Image (cartoon, rainbow, N blue to C red; front, side, top):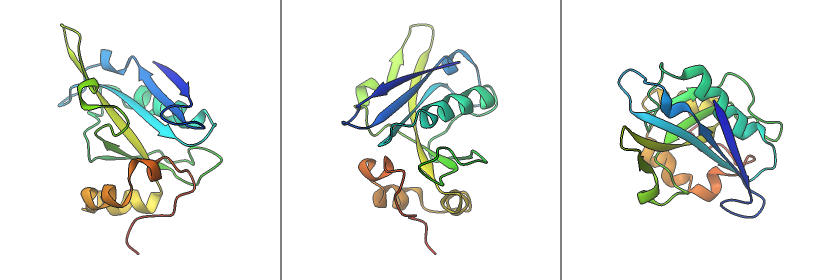
Length: 151
């Protein structure tokens, strides 16, 4: 499993990381996926966490949009976030989110970092659509954003 890191995408000062190789595995009940993350930060740990999850959860997690993942540790020094929400890509145009390789189709999904209490709320039947409406893609990239979970 590898991670490709792009700096200054989708904006200056941002970091974007893509997994490379997750789609070679066959999770039960899931399609072939690659993960990505975008953060307004220079810390590679955001992207490396994406690759770590892909490696640890390959063939066990289908990475379905709306699901949450507990990372069980602080992801990067700049934030206390320690979990992720899987969503349809918001920084990549829809035609580019599925790649047809002939032998398989590979879907790109985005990891949105969460605070643990946001993950717990979403996992306990929290409203993902409401959360995402309060957390547009520019805010989701902010490692210092305030929590959006109801108190």
